[in-house]
Image (cartoon, rainbow, N blue to C red; front, side, top):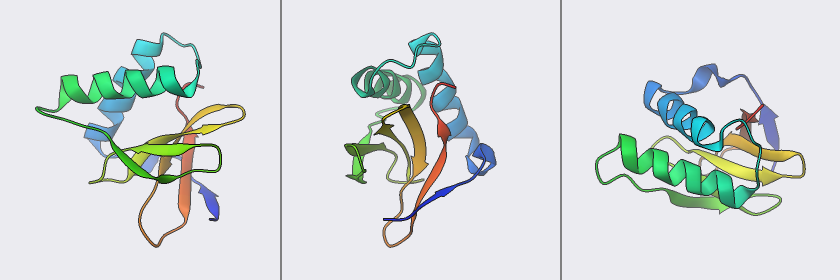
Length: 100
């Protein structure tokens, strides 16, 4: 699947708040995908009543997990965890690193 790289300007306020909370939980550490997933799930549960994360599809190095509404999620890459937008029938869009 092709991957496009674009700035994070295309995130909703809710997605930005969730990702910021996940980054804060990671305390600046890139960690591994499991750490990032745990931080993301905790942020979603804290900021959205009955919030959940979902499997959005396969990534090149593992699953893409995130929001089925916006398609924004996280995926593993060799250099760390990245934020992506995954929508059915569309190219995977790489939005940037979860932790710079």
